[in-house]
Each structure stands twice: as structure tokens, then as C-alpha cells.
Image 1 (cartoon, rainbow, N blue to C red):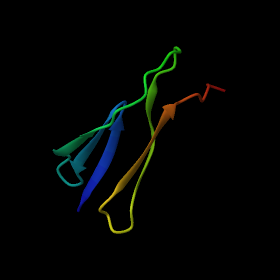
Image 2: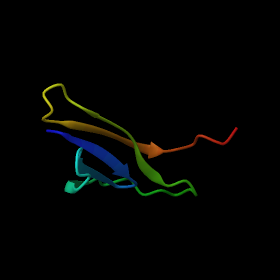
Image 3: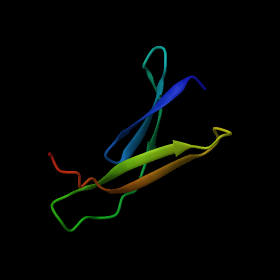
Image 4: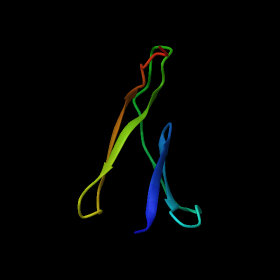
Length: 65
């Protein structure tokens, strides 16, 4: 497909790998948060056939060392 995925909070953007133009966007519905840390997309993967995208959401709790 010659494209790459970019996750930003609750959206997955699909960009052309040569021109960096936006091809499409996938909105992701996240759970409501009741703490100060927001829920966001923390991982993605595509299937071998490139027909499906798996998205994992949660809280990014990694602290600075």
C-alpha cells in the first residue's frame, strides 16, 4: 500500500510514504477516564494480509527516569 500509520490520541492517520499526504483517518472510540492520565492509543499492528489493523488503547504510565 506504500503507506504508514500515525497514532494521535484517538485517531489513526494513514499517510502516503513518499509524499506524506494524508490518505485517510480512522477514529478510535476510547473509554472515558476518571483519573488524570488520559486513555490513548498505545500500540498498533497490521495483519500479514494487510487487510486488518489491531489497535490497543490504554494509559501511558511510563515515567521519566
